[in-house]
Each structure stands twice: as C-alpha cells, then as structure tokens.
Image 1 (cartoon, one colour):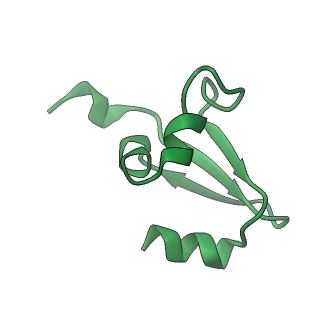
Image 2 (cartoon, one colour):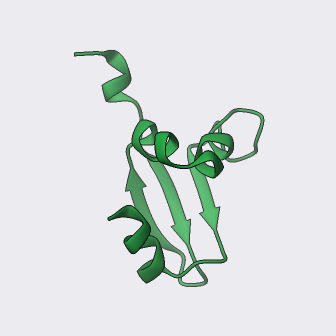
Image 3 (cartoon, helix red, strand yellow):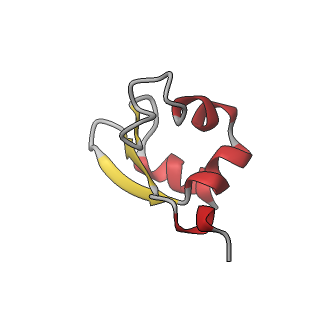
Length: 66
C-alpha cells in the first residue's frame, strides 16, 4: 500500500452553517481543479488541509460528493 493512501484528509467547511466534511484529498483533487489548487501550499488553506466553500450549502456539497 502506498504511503499517499495514509495522507491527512482534506477538511472542507461548507456554507454559512460551517458544516465540516472530511474527504480523501487525492479523490477530491482528481475530480475538481478548485480543490486541487486550494490544496497546494501556495494557498493559505493548503498547508493546513482546510478549504472553506462559502457559496454552497451542505446539501448541495453532499450532492457534489455523490
């Protein structure tokens, strides 16, 4: 098994409700250019593995994950 399989999950904080989702970083980054960019160390959110999505609701974000 690769060590990358054990990487820290990405914490996504969604909407004004601040709902928290923990997602395997490699999976969400492979499906979304936004999350790939936001996970890089160049962004404030990258090194701490937290990304905030304020313009979505938790319900909509759950649909994105499905």
